[in-house]
Length: 401
Ligand SMILES: *Cc1c(COP(=O)(O)O)cnc(C)c1O
Image (tube, rainbow, N blue to C red):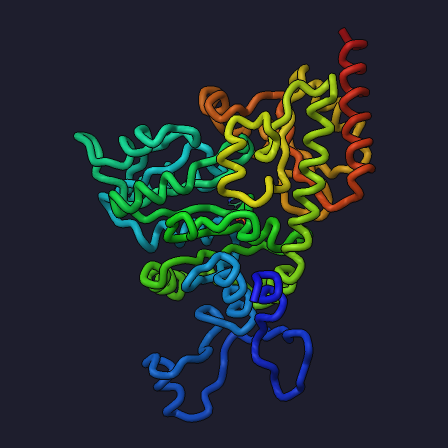
């Protein structure tokens, strides 16, 4: 069966009430039918739920669906995307290990690598997303001042630069050097890109974004190779970043419509990007499936569609962004993304405000950069609104000088 059918038809076994939709298993623990069963469950000679910090039917249903979508052997769900990222690193790295990461990372992933793992003697090297194979290889190999990479961690497409990392190239390097390839697949979702097919060992997600898709709950998930997942499961079972059954119930239901939503998100995003690229008052537009994207061929090779995030550059800096926001009628101003509702973000003053000027420059974060998480509204309405806001804000700025 195809992914779409399985995302809808994968379901927890029916209870004696013959319900159609999976019920919510809001229970912290599970009962033993006998002393022997309790013993067997703890000895792991019998499989089953014991306590919801370890497993819960709603959480298992969600995990099973994501494993199926990603082509992964096993997975664990966590309370947030960051808990998933942290568990995937903390469970597998030890003092003295080296992590090579793409420079363009979600802010908190950057903080984990530079401020938290460093306390435990885990060192790192950053590489540009668009670095050549030789540059990645140099960072991965041991040298006088660092050991060989134990893990390579990256996001593609990146936030907010929408730069791509060549997954096939890193898959080849992994074959040669044997590091753990760990990919944050949040922006693409497993419907547009499956890193495991390119050799990734782990795929992590903030389920808070497109998997939920309607901005309701937080969640995270790590899926991948069974032997690595065993170590991550041990870490999670004893440190407790578990996903709540309620959030898992929401997220599992949401996966039934992920394919449908991503199709519309991507179609809307491409049409909006094409329209804004033609607009005289928009300086530049970046979107992986626009032929003008510097890595358009790579995008076509590793993604089945361009995703829901478009960035635009407006001339006039923050003042222009203010005027643009004031003129927009439909989008919401928020730092989140992956919602049915279109969201605009100014990374320079919000999500990436804490970066130093040179780091911002390396990531292409300018005062006039606007990240658009394109929603599911009617595309004619969105195009008309963004076009008028670009015109009106440019005019407002011309009059103020
Ligand atoms: C949002 C996000 C995260 C963090 O997820 P939370 O659910 O907010 O903890 C990690 N990576 C990427 C790419 C994200 O967009």
